[in-house]
Length: 140
Image (tube, rainbow, N blue to C red; front, side, top):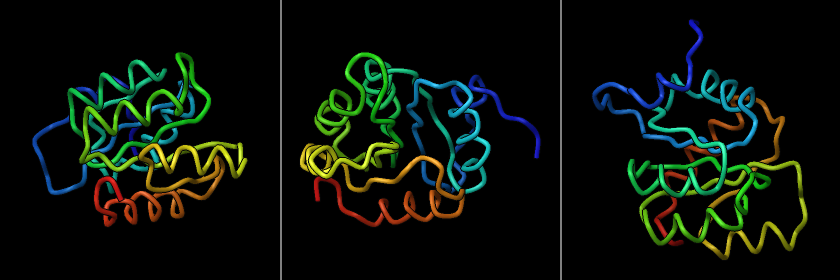
């Protein structure tokens, strides 16, 4: 598979039936790996390196699903989830983190996220979680 860069994500082609995806993570290498792993099943319409960018990209692109890292500059998922839920209510949000704190997970689910997944899971498990999130109604 050819390498995909972040500009490719912002210049995504015409709709092709794949669900649209926003990837938000402060680590550029992680963003690129996620793009490579998910590009076959999802049309990546935007990437973000911090919570502010994630909120802006979600509002601009209205992706079907957003994969949001917990720990990012400008407030991380705590800041992004609530704002994305308000500005792009149809976007289903999946939280990506190494932190398994039950209180954090519950807080983010209460704020509008529909699922949580640990960093380092297999590409198949990640893709399955994102696909399952699409089946959840917005705001559920």
